[in-house]
Length: 103
Picture (cartoon, rainbow, N blue to C red):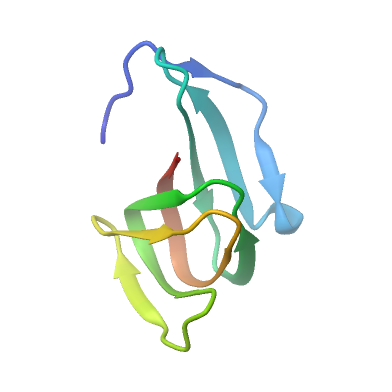
């Protein structure tokens, strides 16, 4: 994904985990929303409300989704999914640029 046409972008950043994750919220013409951001090297746990697909643009991480004992490794160009009302642990080894697709 290199372009998002006709999107409404909130110019105020969402900052989480003492600045270890910074993102911007985007709303598309059809009403769907996305988040575009970066996670800096760290170990974090995110919770989800809606189902999410994390599209990784650049960087490296490993992820463990709630209910799994398995850590999976990902790099830019890959993605992973997390169920709604769930969580995932992520360990980022180099700046991880992403698009989070909700729903």
